[in-house]
Length: 271
Ligand SMILES: [Zn+2]
Image (cartoon, rainbow, N blue to C red; front, side):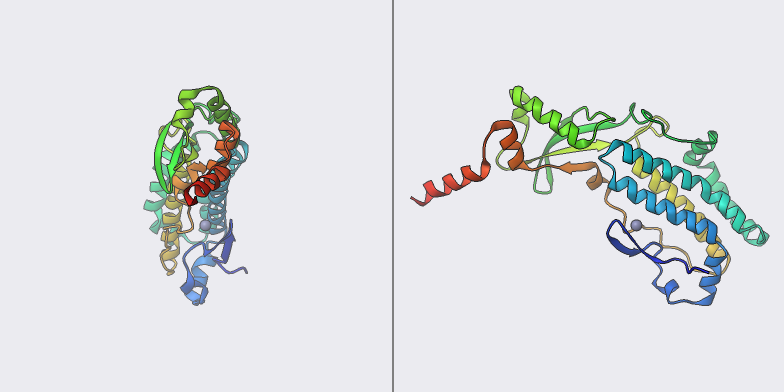
């Protein structure tokens, strides 16, 4: 039987999914607790993987939607798999009943439960998703303003449109990068069912809730609580932003080679 949890590499991140160095050191109680929950833990681990896919595909509409749908499918299955796992353990079922109720009455799970096959269809993210464009100086945001990043276009396509507009619109160009700042684009995926909430946050909340539930089940079998901080999660602020090259912007929009300008300036200064 496979051990749980395995140290897993996801998107280049080398961390154990459930912080479990002590688990891997293999105490038999721990192993027993996890092997009793094999189906549900496996599905929950799958949720984790899909969440990273959502992060990695955040700036590509279709891959993002596919990852979101996979996440939703896996999330919905965790409580069902847990029921399978616990078929012959009524005492554990009774102990975790309050945790299961918390999951089932949670707003997210109620929404997912309403439709048998809750799937975000093409266009399902169109209404609420938002975009912004602006400039950064180092790590700081210098200026940002709303810019229609269409839900059907990649962030790179939106950025190309923005540069094209800057070529003809002096005012817009004036708000763009100068010698000290670089262009950046932000986007946020939202849907009407979860108003004003980035879907990454919604997904993380769902993962955490299920983690509490499974952690409770592991504890009921005599195992240790999970660490649910998901340290390998990327900062949502950093996922939403896509930074672009200042040099490329000046060249493409103004026809100015910043590198050559700087060399000329240094030569003049040296004379
Ligand atoms: Zn991870």
